[in-house]
Image (cartoon, rainbow over all chains, first blue to last red; front, side):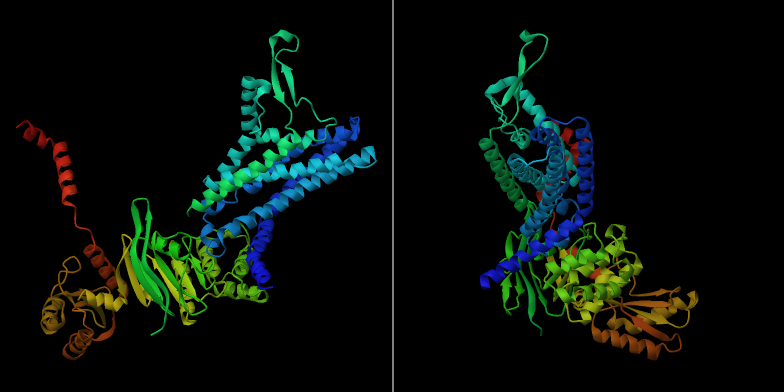
Amino acid sequence: MRINQELLIGLKPIYNTITFEIKKQRKKFFAFLVLIIMVSIAIAVITGFVLPDTKLDFFFTSLFFIIFLEDFAACLFFSAIICSEFDKKTGYIVFPKINKYKLILGKYLGNLILVITLITSYYIILGLLGLFYYGGETSIRLFYSYLIALLYLSTLSSFVTFFSSFLKSVNGTIIITFILLLLGFLMIDQIIALIFAEKFEPLYSLAFLGNLIVNILADPFPNPRYVKVPFDPMNPDAGSMVQWLTPSIGVGITMLILFTVLFFTLAALLFKRRQL
Amino acid sequence: MSETIIKLENLTKKFGKFTAVNNINLEVRRGEIIGLVGPNGAGKTTTIKMIAKILRPNSGRILIRTNHGDLEDLQKVSATVTQMGFLIDIPEFYKMTAYQLLKYFAKLQNYPKNKINERIDWLLAFFKLTEWKHENVKKFSKGMKQKVGLIQAIIHDPEIIILDEPQTGLDPLARVDIRNGIKALQSQGKTIFVASHMLYEISEICDKIAMINRGAIIGFDTVENLASALKTSEVIFEVLESITPHELEPLLSRLTEKLNPYLDKDLDPSVSKIPIEYYPEEKELKIFYDGNHKSKGEILKILIKEFESDFTVVSYTQEKTSQLERVYTQMVKDNEPEPNIQDVKIKEKKYRLRKGQLKGEIKK
């Protein structure tokens, strides 16, 4: 009984920080919500003109936005988690009041709740649009995709938090992580594909692992999981380049979990050493 | 004598090879206001950061009297110390309203939920910020932010308040507000630890002063006791009538003669060349005496009785700030390290090399 009470007292600062963080980030949250609604309207309008053959095809094309949404939201919501306390020196006010790990955990969970709400909203809208255009039951695969989207979010958030733990400024963290996620990984993937072709699967790449969110909808699941894109479609002798589509489900999920653990561990170690 | 509430024992903090705080020992008693005075980079903020558990000392320890009544190692008591409130550096806040921020801080410090709003309203009213309650702090001036900084430090009504440069960069009116706030806390019996390089502000509010230089405490006592250690003090007498220039010289000679037993015999020429000075615009006589309390009384008696026909003493004051400045300057001088002979030789050699003086010697 007493242990439970102590645990509750220990969790209270985290709860207070979560609610405070949600209030603090509400403007950003509503901006993203508006973006999601606008994209959903655009999808609804386009689908009205060019209706994909099946419901899964509809989800497949519409879900490409979710990867961009997650990258963008992760950079903007999680970049300030650690470095803002040092960059803006707000740590001088809060560190004496709350255990710094509880503070960061509370901030992280507050932002996580907001981004999960955004992702869930998008999936619900897609599910409703699917119902509207195609009727019938919603495929379980959309739910699997949703779960992988959440797992991908946890990896992205740990990745951004890791950068936030050692970079000086919030803006620097946003720019660097955004460039890495949207361009960096894709460029490295291209170079690796040129060198190693199908012999090396880019499992290091978060962008590649994120493709699982969409490809899990594919029926049947792609096999092989890469395609060969000819350099010159008119001339088969000009050679081709391998483009990896998706990791396998098991390996993809394992890698996402491993990266999450790795980046959080590194972030915690760096945060421990960082001094105001 | 009241009990010790914070005790710093051989506290040391190093950043690489640089020693920011060097073996500090200090005791703060319940209800005292202690000033930590020192130039920029002396180690004041580092000391406060260690008390706030933002920095971990390399050696030594900080003891704090806990609710159990014992002095316990700060590192071993609960992660955050709720009976202390801190204002460190120039406060920067999340971009929220003053009310939202203060409510969050009060919750973090476990202040009773049903009393939070009342407490915030009272504090905002005391610091004349009521109309700014629901405004975002990013719109606040530096002085207003500093006031919110002080409010967040005391929002949970802590017993010990630790303030780092609370008046730096503020205009005179804001400084007066902050000073009044600190005095109000003093009247409530709070223990306050203020770090500053603003000697006037410190001398106005503190019971005792710890002087810190190069990370070490070079003096810790009341302003009066620190001054008496120097064996010299000054007292200013305001007179009613102006003393004309032709009256001044013979008057100063007579004054020096009559007050001679009480005047400072070893007056530092950098402070003043003569022990009695007259400031015509202010109609003030400044007298440097030997620092003895009795001497001060004797001087006053002599001025009133024996110089009745020359001038009328209307008031006398002893400026704490100027005393403190002199005490501080003297102590810093006394604690300057002896120049390293080897370093001096190397510097001299480099200088002579630049001047080309050594070339000839080397050829020879």
